[in-house]
Length: 418
Ligand SMILES: Cc1cc2nc3c(=O)[nH]c(=O)nc-3n(C[C@H](O)[C@H](O)[C@H](O)COP(=O)(O)OP(=O)(O)OC[C@H]3O[C@@H](n4cnc5c(N)ncnc54)[C@H](O)[C@@H]3O)c2cc1C
Image (cartoon, rainbow, N blue to C red; front, side):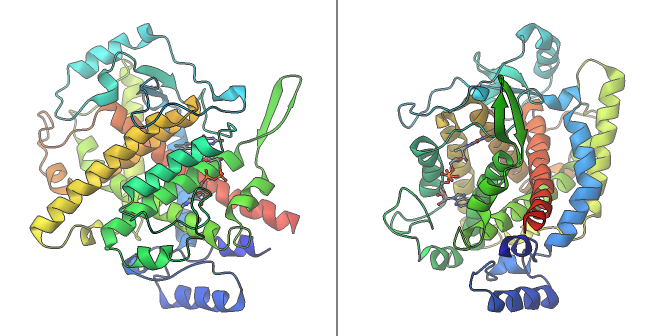
């Protein structure tokens, strides 16, 4: 099967060797697996290095971190109505429901958080409808949320927020009249920043769909569900032939998103290294351990030598760069609001968390100076992260790390079924 080979080629052709490999591969296949164009092709990343780094360094540690109390409880408002259209979605299985934690358990956390200085918008967190959710008890997996409601959400994210004119259709879009032939010509013609934006969203979309394939409801006997990888579903979504080359492109975007969030983690280390920042849960010993593990992960992220260089973004003339940055921010904010239109609670929970995590990563990447200038022992003026942002950042990256691990597992499963 073509699939197993295609996924694991170089993501960007950073070296002549990998470009040549991909090129030779493409020439030998009727399906176009990778498109090697534009500045991003020069980012120093190859998929094998990311896979190894993720499997051996990041994945085991980030999993451990996600199990710690500070990171497993996420405060979120799942009751905010969709600001764009009347709610029309639902899931096909009962597993979509999210059970919040009792509020009393977190009074102490809220008191602590309130005593901290805040310079950023506390949107969802301050809402009386916001509740703590135990992420370990509500894992992201197949929910059966699909069809026009899900398409509408994805469509509106891409159509209204990816700098795209309406006349350009995305490939294979079930809601569009054309097959999207001109899409990639349009995308390659964009400036780097706008192209990056599209790739991030597409990478997130690929990650969510990969999780639902990896954690699929395989059967239910006597009310007892059995979850596991569904190779058929994975093939339908990512096989180069079945998706006319789109699947591998989307997976490439997943790797790109991983690199962006990895870069953000390596940049935010100085913020957490300061003694004034702790990961408060009320248990001093646990909190110190959580912080030590987080700092260890930061050290690992710094040791990765193929980082995406965000300096090439917003590097044009000062005025243009500033307005582009603002546009970027607003589009991203809008995507967060669209998440309130997701018609399945569990999908909404993880959709919100992962967009907030990515938003936090971008905030970090564009605050390098502020982070470097933070005082060691006084409040974080100039740059600050809330508990919710920190939890979202770590868990969103944890999801990507898991996606990459799951992808490797599918590769093995596909080889076995050959
Ligand atoms: C925010 C959000 C969270 C979700 N979370 C879950 C979940 O936790 N569990 C669950 O079972 N379902 C979830 N869903 C639904 C899931 O993402 C799919 O929408 C659903 O399974 C239907 O899939 P589909 O094959 O029809 O295509 P969709 O994934 O709905 O995609 C619609 C169209 O977008 C294009 N497309 C697909 N992937 C990409 C990509 N990576 N890049 C660019 N374009 C792409 C294709 O043209 C495709 O036909 C979620 C949906 C949303 C909007």
